[in-house]
Length: 297
Ligand SMILES: Nc1ncnc2c1ncn2[C@@H]1O[C@H](COP(=O)(O)OP(=O)(O)OP(=O)(O)O)[C@@H](O)[C@H]1O
Ligand SMILES: [Mg+2]
Image (cartoon, rainbow, N blue to C red; front, side, top):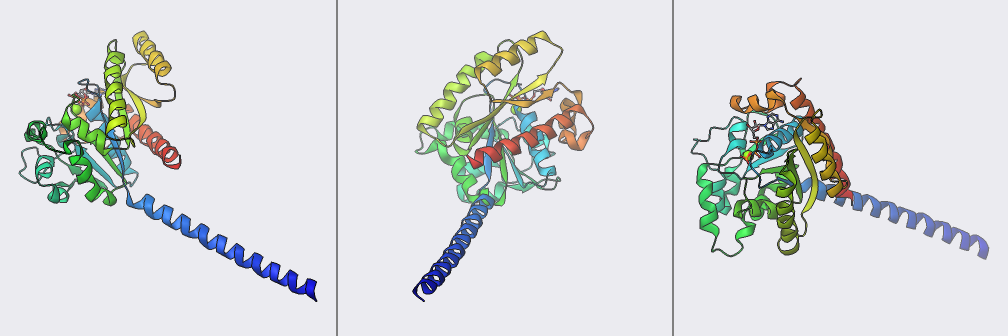
């Protein structure tokens, strides 16, 4: 009788314990899903070197992710406003933009606009943005304006993709402080690595002093010409300096990529069959996979 009771008690406890464990597991999964759903992954595309394909990468990566039905905010942090016009937005529009958002942080949401592409929204830039560097210089917490703004709207998006100007000034520092992931576009040319050293110093300083959550998602080789010896040499050198950090995808030099912005279209909306479109679609897939791994880590 005693053994029977003991067995029943053990079984009952076992079943109850199992139930509790299952419920707890479901709860953890639910909370994990909730938190994953609610926070956008913020990716900054930066390199202080000019003309290396930052804007082309930011616009086309954003558009390819949007085609994959991810909710995307493309944030243009460059006073040149090339990402803004690259998705067909009129730079002369007097609607709220990133400049107004810097000075009226409570209205950050008003500066986010839908584009004509499903799932893709834009935080546009105007040339006024140059003034931000001067205006913010004496202000406390000047490095975190963009981060605070994105915090207000981040839960509406899966990814925020930030395009940076070709400098390491306050606009780029704000972008680096707002992001969790850095993508560095790099053109395979002789001086490419020299620029990288300076960028890496800034990246390390930002991580040490301002944003420890920032990590390198990858280096993307742009305007890649597989037949050129110089391209091969630079590619090998970059891979040996940054093991595991160079994306498997490379972006070829492709005339469709340079034509698309003049039509206010990302390349997949201009010529989906082009090599440029295919390369950026592949990059988007690789980013999702890398971000998945980074998220799990
Ligand atoms: N893979 C490519 N094939 C052909 N042309 C390209 C490619 N990538 C970029 N370009 C062209 O090269 C020029 C510079 O590219 P992009 O504007 O993206 O560089 P950037 O780094 O954003 O420049 P900036 O530093 O001035 O902001 C543009 O005219 C663009 O259309
Ligand atoms: Mg640019």
